[in-house]
Image (tube, rainbow, N blue to C red):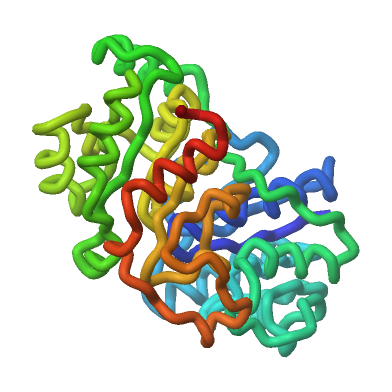
Length: 321
């Protein structure tokens, strides 16, 4: 039997799907499993044993036709479309795969949750609904992206070069994309100072969009690690940290693979639908209750989250005093 899993989308979405991919692999143990994903995500799965990777980019109509031909030629028995957007729905419909599972209660999916998705639950819960309808046990909300010894060595060498001690530093992501500056919280500098007074150093992580803000923050306290780590390297760095504080961002999801507490600040987006897996109780927002229906969510100003409320949330886990 040959199984095809499709997952594209944003980085956070891909990470949230990893427990489901892992559960499918466990369910179909011994079978040939392929994952169709974006080229930029191929490196994420480089250390994942037992799954072959086929990549896809936006490309041309001809590229899509070639991909569909590849799928048909491989004679897959079951297809799990964990993306289920317009493009992957067409690919699924033309795949020739006799049994197809997806997120929408319509053609081309024989197996689906049975209702239209309108953001009424977390994205991960929705994927678990697909497993349920396929009579497969639910996945546990624990993201999975394994690292190798070379990554571990690089991260350990970096930590040693900065004279840091394991579990004596925290990771913070204070930035956001230029298009979503409303996700940025104004009190990261004050938080770093409060933690420094408790003998905890701060590592400021991020990419090009975070360069200026990390440079400014690290000029007062902490270490600027902008563009220093790949996704898998950041996961390994997170394993050595005590905890992380982030906005609603890709690093929030990346660090959820590190099995540490992630305190995520939400304002304009609904945490009920997008919080990091396994970290729902560590969401920090002005509101304390969120509607299940995403259409009824009212955005709030992230700037209204106080420094004291963040510190109190961390203290509840007995991580700091």
